Image (cartoon, rainbow, N blue to C red):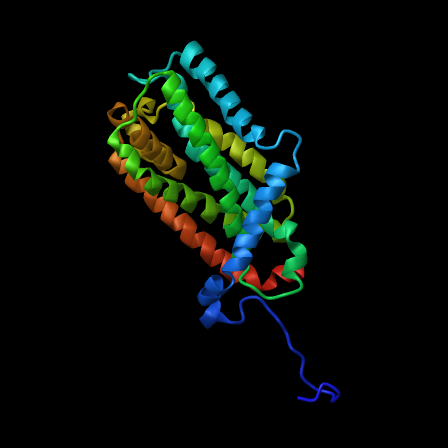
Length: 279
């Protein structure tokens, strides 16, 4: 078409119009995904006062507080496992979940300029924030290794299954992050709700204690918290026979994880095309 001629047609770029090619577009835009992930990693560790040390200090301080409160004062049982190791084994999935949820819930707002200028699968933005959580996870896992060496604790062969439970933690974080990211675009008050949810969830999830102390009649209901299954799985993989998985509860948690991820994807895709109207 001659660029000097007038046209009665306008080109409209709208998220969600290419329904048949959307999931293929996720692969086509993989370089954008990697770029956003790398940018978030640089922002997290370069534009802070203490940088990477914050990823070490935060879980260590939480472990110390929980060890004192639940291990020393409340004297909750830890089996044959040192209480700091018991707590830190649960801090790994919790920190991954909390960081992923917090970052993904605000990711669309922080990338508002991109949403209004060009088409790409919007799912790329919250998904890229998971990479930063994986970096924090790797740092915390290194701390756990040092901690086990200090306490002369040897993990069992179960640890080779740890990636499976890490994937389950991703399902919980990503699924709930998609829901909150979508709600945060339409209702900005949700940015104040996320920190409260994470703070409350830290205490109602078995991070500072073993879920085995929950009475048997309540344990299945308690396992509807999806992080219960994730944390129990991590402890079983890291601590071996010292921690047992309550399989009915783990199955219930896994079903909630799957439903949460599917609901997050459905709600995100349903609302994606109108994001630019609310930014």
